[in-house]
Image (cartoon, rainbow, N blue to C red; front, top):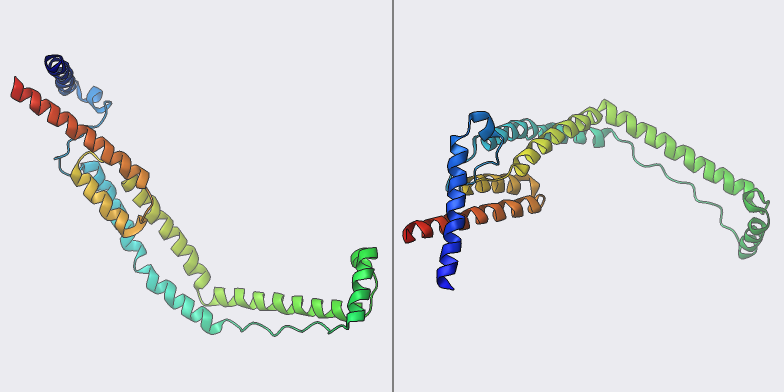
Length: 221
């Protein structure tokens, strides 16, 4: 049984080595179309370095903008009007409440009941006060520059996020690649892309096992 297992592993390892040699002998175009090389001990992939540089560039543009946004928020809250005082609805007696409910059950919103005009006038006034307050808040947001700052922050944050996504979705080909991706994840993406990192780990572990098998076969040979 042991002899059979050794023979089986040796054939598989020889086949893998032959495939690697064939790939090295391919023309450049054909080799580029094959799967990327996975080498646990390899340095950081040049393509990943390029993606990381693009992410760092977007990050540098985004970070100082936090101060500008904070300044605009301060100006906004300084100029924002306080909430208006709402008018309280008239206090109804128990008898008036019962009559109001009975009238609404029979005639709906158009039903007539005691002090209906007073209640509706209070509701309209409160709505008008709220609408005027919201319009004043919108003006304060524009004049303080907060509206413009929020749009710019959204644009820069989106570009930063997309650049970071490209880094995290790049298939790691070495432990150096994994280390770089983990730094980006800790800096910004927190627990996102865990499934991508798990695939990286499985890919690198598979490559490491294949290397160990090849080394064992070489020793046996």
